[in-house]
Amino acid sequence: LQEASKVIPIAADRLQWDFIVVEDNFSAPLPPSIEPENAIPQKTVLFIGVPREIVDAYREVFSLAGLTLVALDIESMSLGRALLSLAETKSWLDALEDEARRKASTMIIDSGARTTTISIFDRNQILVMSVNIPIAGERFTEAIQEKLGVSAKEAEELKRKFGFDGPKGEGRVFSVLQAEFQKILEELKPIIQYYERKRGERFERVILAGGLLYIINFL
Image (cartoon, rainbow, N blue to C red; front, top):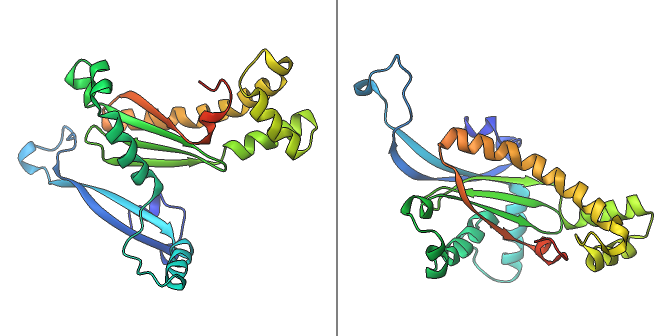
């Protein structure tokens, strides 16, 4: 918990947390000053922390419904279980001919209404990093409203009608959405660089999910 508090911006007494050991006797690269026989065995631990008030709210809902709450899971892990199993179908593996690429790390980008969640799974399909970026569908609508001077309802309609289709609407909506999406990419770059430097693994596949996929010409 002491180490986790260095990277989780929530006080420990306000945190509901748990952890699992995902890799035992992990051998990290040794500095030149340490001989291999003196190396201390390490464990890779997945630590998950959630604001306690969120967990308490779910407990209250289940209690009012007369149900027993057995466990809660974070969206990144449940989404990974669903999508990574689909990614391992024969048609997908046919596209990845060599075993090294089949075992590569995977990034899932889930962009919904309020946030875009970047979840990174290693070659063993273990969640090793999850980052929330506060830019998604609602922010796209707000940006259109601000830049084009229209109402929130009109902005949402323009987003759905024109999306990322440059030629449509004289490219006005496209320009706004492109600028907002560029902000997501700017947040994404250091995440990729950190992971690849820290883990020594590269990404061979990215899975897209969420409402962002429904915006015209996003892909």
